[in-house]
Image (cartoon, rainbow, N blue to C red; front, side, top):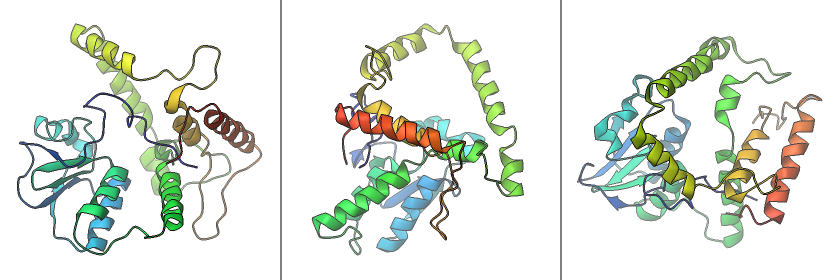
Amino acid sequence: MGTQSLYVDVDDDVLRPRTDTPCADAPQQGIHLFHYPKSLCSQKVRQLLDEKGVAWTSHVVQLPLEAQYEPAYVRINPRCVVPTLVRDGKVTTDSMNILRFADAALPGPALTPASASARACVDRFLASADGLFLEVLTYGEIPGVRKPLLMRRAAKGTHAEKLARLDAKLREHGDDPRLRAAYARLGERVPALAGGGMLLRKPLSAPLLSRLGITGIFSPFTGEAHVNDRTRPWLHLFSAAHELAHQKGFARED
């Protein structure tokens, strides 16, 4: 059982993933990837391009320097995220969308199984991997799990610093009438998380609860999930809420 990205059904060109969409501001010849080396989503796409054996041009977007907000990049990807794939002047965004498009459209060996049952298995795996709430796992403290020293040092204070910067931006621009109008427009399109006496509402809630349910770190070597008595009740709670979302039709399978 899988969930789809929050913005898939949003009727707004800024939030909707682009698939082979013409863009005059993108490179007009060849295959180009705008990415950041340490970005997990970028790593997925780079690996696929390597497996396909296609030649591509690298454009590193320096996320630590907030280069994703530079006007030249925003005109290519209005969501200001990486990666972005460009093929002969046509843009494809959202890593999962890029993986599926690139496998079908680019030359090289097909990486998607031929049989429907095998494709369904791959889709479930991709959906599960894409559902990991990596920001929480990166910055959060997980009971019973001791992160490597370098990771602890890198994460210490980073999230709080980002929140402080966001608060400062809100104080500076919070009353901007253009921003208020834009958010009001988005509010009409993006479904609310809760309301009407329901715990869950619309497809947004299921992926969110599914990601919040990942409260431990999984070992690919032992198959063990580091879940203890403190985190297990939360896993059961979010799992039940996720199942309720599907029963009520608020989430769909991939």
